Image (cartoon, rainbow, N blue to C red; front, side):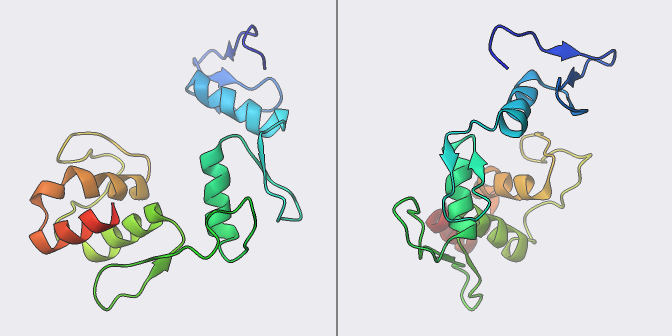
Length: 160
């Protein structure tokens, strides 16, 4: 959809995709839906996968390469062979992305100081709300950094 086309809303105020039955609350979300699902003229393409998935943003493409093709060396895969090991002594958990390591660490090793996640209650530190527990945990590593135990604060500083 070009910039000169107007986005259409339904009677509830949601944006309606002109190609399928997708509804979104935000115009930007509809823009990315149309671009990714219907235009298919995306700038980043995986040439390793047989289905050649395409990505709208470089960050999505690099995340795909890091998680799906971590062991496949190629010119387009800067993450080949990269892994992050949990800094908690004795854990040994490994991930292919730093963000997944932060989520693992928060979920597995920080239960005593991170408040329990619920979709209806916001962060107790800053009152922000989150749609997923992973987004909440990733946020908590920064939001509660000053109140976490010193040994964990030192570990978190190393993985952030």
